[in-house]
Length: 610
Image (cartoon, rainbow, N blue to C red):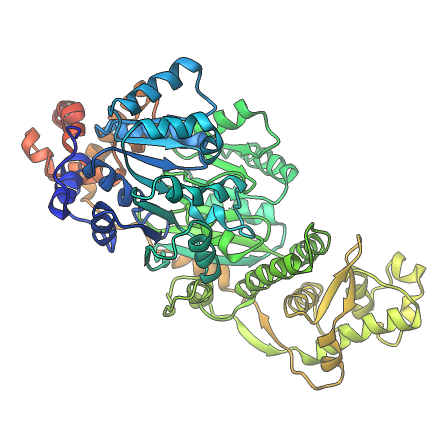
């Protein structure tokens, strides 16, 4: 047993939690999970980002005899994860493709000799016979399978190498396994259990609610301008993540922000790996930096003070959206999840599904994911209730999302829907033509554009019958008909075509209720955005800033992110308590024995400096 280990049991777990990590008690179901794994049981844990999943395997690995083996897809973050553990005195190491022979050899020797508490591996390493033989030579306390949703074959983060992990139990039947993820519907949950042979494990499902995140979805109207307004009015100087669908959009958005005086870096799979690594490192280590990325970025990011996550394109699924927005506000402080969503998003996503690889069943699954995402965008109910419902959990209206703060109106859009569908019918039947939304809306508005004149569309009976609605309103009608499956997209040019449900609307057999965006929605969300809680008197702010400056210096010297030294919450408590000695400092949450010995004197000196 290492110096950090204690006798098995809950008392040993609590003692380890306090001495190593500096916390006095577990949160939520953590203590039950830890107790279960320490006693040798398998566990499947679904817990939201920021809920404390890591402690659920780190504590048992320290209490049980042997080395905890953590399987993680996050090669780019393993160094930071290991640095954070070493900083609290845990003997941690990793094996991945970034190491040279000497580094790997040292880690392997430490594992075999029992000089490690935790060993991180990428899943593909387990396909290498030498890795399996290495594990056979050591004593394994547990297997932790992090980001377990990666095993779901039709999920948003599927990793083929995860499918091999079912073999862990066959080769090491006496070693307990704990699989963890922040994102899983009931179907994904069942798939994880099945593919990892965890049907007989104890399942722990925490609430997916993240009450500190304000969900807001706005109609696209010059999205870069809308984004700039969000950043300059609400998140000036804040760290955040902006997601775009394409690499080109990532590059252009990052350039746009920099041109407007906002520090931002791009991140996508097409960049040189050294550039990606440098940009990720800067994001983790610098205050107030924004990363613009495709979904290739973000999994496993532990940065606690990400104040916003913005989407400039429609996510493909609610699971993906929840996973990405969950990277905001890990510290529990108010944060924003902002999405700009428009007609072209729906058209583009529908086309991507129609042309995707795979069979019809696969395309139906993709369509179901998109329909759920569209339902979230178009709901007139609480966004949070809708998200929790998607994951099979119940919620009450949060009073903090955009639809709670400025409830949108429902209106009877049956007649506008009939006008629009009639236009599609007349073009198809009378002219044998198919057009996209722009041309159809111009016909409805009676606009004699060159394209309308060229095709003689001003002679259609439907020309000008939609003058009672504005262009933006018609685009909303098209978007919502697509979302409800009453219109479809066809071909490379996004032509609108009818569906089976269209006939019911045209025949007056189906009512079409639509969502009208209130003009005051964005303003209401901005003005009522909850202010960060006041954790200390204003006169102590200079003390807090001195502590932050010391932390920044220490982090730079060690080459680690600042939060690896201490979280802001710990520094606030230190500034408020003003401990006079090491004994008092040791009572602060987040100050374990190793950090007290390592940083205690520097902190006390910083507090005494005026």
